[in-house]
View 1 (cartoon, rainbow, N blue to C red):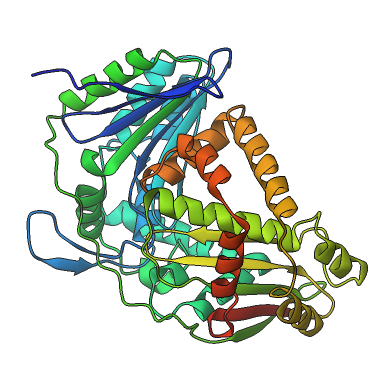
View 2 (view 1 turned 45 degrees about the vertical axis):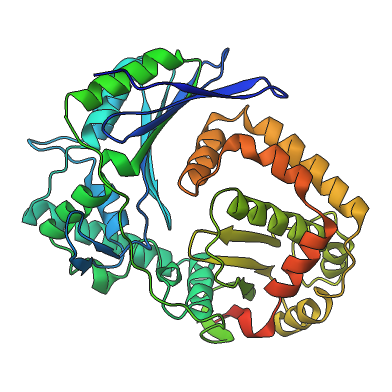
Length: 430
């Protein structure tokens, strides 16, 4: 059988290159060498997140729905080993620090280490493909995750955001917490976990990324050898089913009371369903980031005015989040007067000027942050994985930054600030 060809993607301006290959099993692998770094950082990610709750079972026409929060639940259970112990202990024996996280569209397992890269890679490549679920260990995990869910519900910042998402969205699962609810996780069964693992943890739906002072070809050879021993065959893309989502928000305002020192305020803007992917989706994210930085970034005159009036503190921020089936902006902070802050935002955001000088300042700033990204292995891996499942690349970023125009920001603002797509979440002191 011929050896899969390694493709080298280069960015000459910053002298960086990514070695990429798709193995016979369907697994994609990328290595970005960073000579001189003492640490190596590796991730094994699956294109499977909290919004993937309905899908066709591969090889059939049968559509199934699984409980909310199951992707996060599965992430927790993957570390447990049959016969006792867990993968955390295995990594520790070779001096590595390991972790995992689940977001809306992906689940990622990772480790960082200053030695024994090969041994730690063996552990990473093995345990993610060896599920072990029983009635007993699933029941035990339900208790652990239920405590986690209740802890988040007792955290004012998390409750503020959770209430906002439920106001913005009618049906899209992005409205639900990644952890699910106490009620939903209580319905999870071992057979549900095995079904989701067989479906979404197939190599064709996964991606390995390694960065640090590593030999790219050696890493790729190690991953290829591990895959060959499993004899997995590629499978077609998973057919995921998402509910229709109206353009308007579900409700315009949600208020809640908790033991907080001052009111917490968050305003959300629901993006129109656009089904963008690849470079188009990445470009939209950059346009949104530019626009919000110009309008309410810390160096903006509007931020200074709100701050001087005492309506916001230095934790006030705005950001945009998007995937293949959703997009939204959120902004907010503590405020002594939520109604006045809301009025200021509604009256002013659509009138603030956006100049060519503003754009050029954002482009310089973003390019500087892009270059600095390659000095932080954890952030580098996070951004790479964020992009790879959306169909774009780290090396797309500079060109897209340079392509943004003032008109792009104006157009995005006009669409984003529609009153019918705006909601507010407030938490008042008890």
